[in-house]
Amino acid sequence: MATKAAARAVAETLFAAFLAEGAAAFETDILQPADTLLDLYGEDIRARAYVTQDPIRGEMMLRPDFTVPVVEAHMRHGAEPARYAYMGEVFRKQEHRGPRAPEYFQAGYEVFDRSNPTTADAEVFALFSSLLRPLALRAATGDLGILMAAVAGLSTLPSRKAALLRHVWRPRRFRALLDRFGGRTPVPENRRELLAGGVARAAPLIGLRTEADIAARLAALADDAAAPPVSGEEVDLLDAILDLAAKAPVALARLRDYAGHLPAIAPAVARMEARLDALADRGIDVSALDFEASHGRTTLEYYDGFVFSFHAADPALPPVASGGRYDALTAVLGKGRSIPAVGGIIRPGLVADLGGLA
Image (spheres, helix red, strand yellow):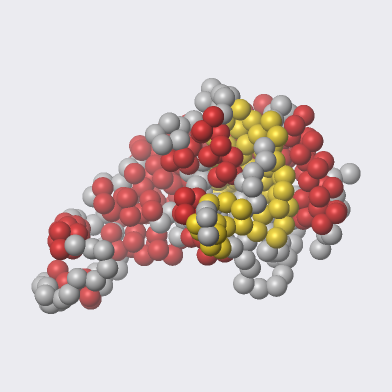
């Protein structure tokens, strides 16, 4: 494992390269407010954050990443368009000793630009590809926007679609919900009893839920039980999208075909095509680029569009670099204002372990 000095040296090289692209240097505190930011990271990071209690500032956490603080700062007072570069240590608990350290360097590059989001996607990916070329890494790409559009286009209750969208980043829960909404698994016994009135309604109120809350929940469950299942054709189409893994041009052709049966994904597929054109314009061989429609579903939950990662040959190692688009996060932290945004991070320690950038 690389020493801190070696990792810092690589981080400084990457940071300088990002500044040379016109990015502004960004710095943020190691201690971050947990109460306002932790929920934005998703289940995985919430479970691995180092959280402490400060007598004055309340619940705080050691910085688990840079992107959320960058977005928060930009949405407060950033100009448009904007590019930011940063480097520093992040902290995440690990359950086992191994290649994933609980404390490691990140160097990152973020782009806020509403003029042409697909061009910005290509800019970030091509920059990372160029910097990491000496390591001969495998690049993987995906697009969570296509999956989200497919869910939004299902012919079913809005509540069902909202539940599926909440669990896009939890594949097992998503699968269980899809199978239930599609009528492929039975309704749980306790839910059938509840809907049939077999559970005592005179139970004491526990927690913060009121009788009105419980009544609303029961009404929602009744509506769900009365609704027809998602059609087999739509479930099969969604499964085909989830399972899609091919070189990017082949994947694009299949997605165009799927869009003929599920028109809701057509705009997202068009954006993918424009992105591939933009990548080709920057010298990326898109014919050799891997595309996996489910890529990014087990990482940070703020990604909602194009996602990418770069991998070493050893599958035990975490990605050397990763990133993606997070437009919705800017709306959350901008309190209604939003701007298309994309970025990524490189792990300088892993770069050093693999031989460095020279």
